[in-house]
Image (cartoon, rainbow, N blue to C red; front, side):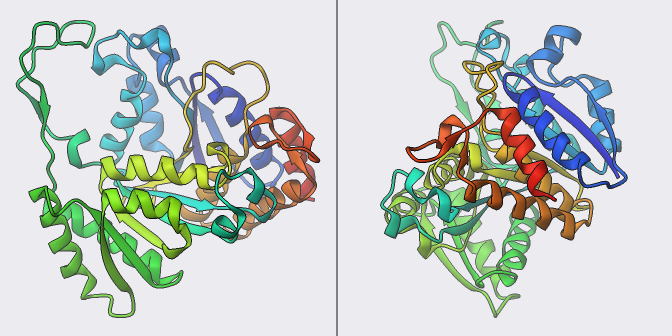
Length: 356
């Protein structure tokens, strides 16, 4: 089982180290190789996604990814900024389906900003299409300066687009995921305003006819954003486009108490995947040993499940994380009175110990 390890920037190295520690305790035949990505790769090689890193990722069964981004690179030309590395990996590997589960563990109900009765028992899955939409549509009509800004420009716009095959394949992923859950899919769009999303809705309806056991409903993005904080448990599987999925999944992260608890998986048609925490590189706390590694550890569990066919090992990690939370151990982002504050390394050690 070949794993490309790409820690990236900021807290990426710290949280990935803890996930590797947990994977090492499973006594499985992993072959891991580490490479630079993001800002550190730009500093060393002049590009956030060097050819050597891309090749390593392409040859691997799965990618364990930390985070990219650092303020010192914000004035670079857009194509050279650290965040372009993740977009490049999605494009070159065809990682079109992003899974972002939002689960509120009973031990963290009080860590959420919502009332316990609204959040207790939350278990939803957001499926975000990753390789289309406005993020990959052709930008036009703008004058780009070397620092990535547009002095003197009169306009700037990006093209939102989706093809039928792109929508169909993410629709199948969503319906099949729902069949293993509560058999409900909510497709989020803006069909009342955008032609792209009227097309999205039409294709969703067409594909939904192939899954008569799954209920499909539609919701506009603004209403979905509101309902996600008003009555989140009404959802089961949410499927949406790239930009709306980016926004909703970050909103959902706060339902769980901390974005430090949210794992994610990005898969292609061969189940090769990139696994990363949903949070960013947090350069303001890098090197302080206070970042929450649980999202990365849970991402490693998703890697075992979806790409490496190791369901039992995935469940062992998830059970260990629940056990650690039940013990009252908390990194600063989820700490509350009556619990025990621990460091990044101590949290990783606790998960390893809980594996037994």
